[in-house]
Image (tube, rainbow, N blue to C red; front, top):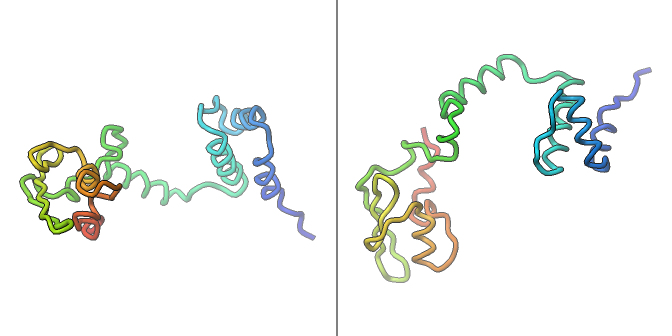
Length: 151
């Protein structure tokens, strides 16, 4: 007869474990001090680590592929994280046109952002908000959403 797997019960127990005990588990499982993040982060990382140690981690080929993708997408350079890739951004000088409530709105793509009505903006969302008075995804508002992510 097979012994029941203790891992699911151990994972479930993380939800009710006091935070100081979670931090001690972190020290035991990662051999380092826990990061100063919130409880949910500690729970999720501990759950992953418990499963990784019990069942094995990523296959070596998966790790290599993730490392290759990381290098292609910025090589771990923190300054590049969260920045839209140049291939997704319209070419400097491009004019974006949108009619809103009967008025044609024209935005020009600049080297460091966008310009609308003679004023510089860092994002299309800020311009869409200025035009409409409500929060919009600027790429969607100007009809560029469908072009993102194409290769």
